[in-house]
Amino acid sequence: MESFTPIASLIGGILIGISSALLLMFNGRIAGISGITGALIEPSTGAGERGWRIAFVLGLVVTGFIAAIVSPTAFESTIDRSTVAIVLAGLAVGFGTRTGSGCTSGHGVCGLGRLSGRSLAAVLTFITTGAITVFVVRTVFGGSV
Image: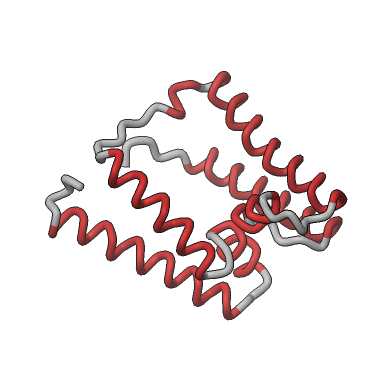
């Protein structure tokens, strides 16, 4: 672990929890990023639904840009994987979120907080699949994928 930041992580986790609770309280919606974003590209999503979803996604993007300006070193990273591997990983994540009816934000943050058995199964599947993927990439492919 290169940058262990327990205080910043705790504050971030609390803010995510409060934000998702407020969205549920005031909109009756789960803060699942894939579901919120996915509904934006569906033609059947009405204007009332579309407005808060756009605001939510813009809030994520704008906050990311502001954070990158305030602390550019926090976003420095080196990805030592091929473009093909990155594209395949992105497609696999997209397939997984559609198959699992949600992502880590919806199931992990909101679903577990509501004691959802379906979300527990999804999160355990995410974690297990991720661990197996890391093992296979590092040991079978020697980390060179």
